[in-house]
Length: 555
Image 1 (cartoon, rainbow, N blue to C red):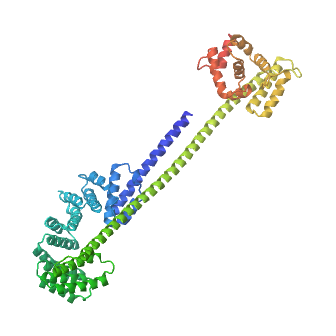
Image 2: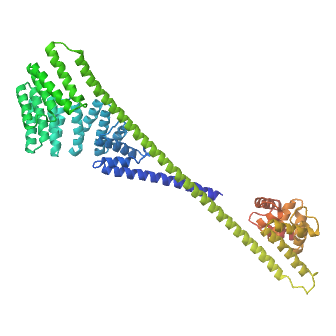
Image 3: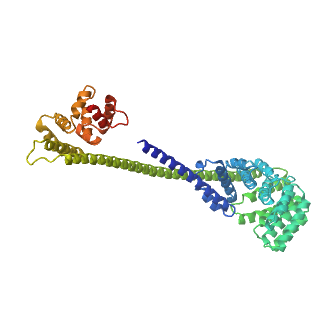
């Protein structure tokens, strides 16, 4: 049984080790594949990562890569990053170890901070990244791009200009460089360096005209009109707006903003009537173009209307303040709704992760059940093999005993015909009687036992035993030169009746199992009694009991 126990324990350990090893290898393979396709196909990469249960990630390197790719993927997909707080762990893990993952995990960490409302914290992270030395421009550019975007969102001016200039100088793609130049333009405007802004606008307009970018040229010309208005050159700004209208239809998609610019120019010039008229035209276009989605437009028009009324009346009206406040409240509500949607998305993602974990645990249970069944089958197979071997061993012992009996029968001289009183004939009959007892012991059915009881009771009462023990002792004495009598004489006070019976049957060549059947004891009890016999008679540990007692009895 100890061997079976060792086999079971070894099998359980092997299954556990194989399961853990296989799980870790599978996770690493999935993460490797996701990282390879993340930049070209983030949707596919994220689908791969969804198959991983993050609670099973025990190795720091795998955990860091998983959290980094999750957050980076959300950033690439422009999805909520509310649930990506563990990107901080990934960024700390890669800091100073791997330039590429350090930069990208840092950018994702900054974007996470932006999502949770910590824009200054996001900018601080980005500043530390773009300030690193010995980092290729190809890695700096994406991070610097995010830094400039967030700086523009915070209306940074002088602080943003060097970042925008650096970005424009390291961008290798033409479209990216134009985009960087436009960001630099915004930085100049926020810094109120309008001359530099106007010069950049002219460059952008010329580039768009040469490359026939109609929509971009339209946007840059509108930007130029706004800059001219900011500079106080209202007539030039008006002319720039009219030039846009001449190149496009009067009801182009930006007509409301163009008329707002005309209204602002008129207001700055003191022409309140024209300002009100242009604002009314802008409102009509906004109703046509924006319909109900006009929150951004109203943030301009309501403020402008309040300023026109104040200039006319010298008073601020509550209705205007309410209008401005309502627009801000709408934007706030929309922002909150967006945040709630993001949080719901994060909860859904966690729910999916929990579902995957449950699925994984279900698979683990199945694996354990299969392993347990396999172990039970293995244990059963071991037991069957051992049982068969034991039976084979008993059959060999039985065959040897039978052969011994046959040899003894053959060695007995043949008596004259009808002479049943000779010692040879008597010896043959005794051996045949022992053979009958052995056959019953070999096949101990109830029918065979009853037959043996009947045969044994011919010479007297047997008190429920299978054999008539005095007869058996007499047989042994006759066959083996008084073995029983000598044994009883020498050890009768020491040995019990059961122990004497066992010795006698052993002398006759009976196996342990056969002895257990004839004496009505279990095989375990027989083994215990054999040990007791050794102690009582002084048989050495490696000596054969029968051979030793034969010598002792003879002596």
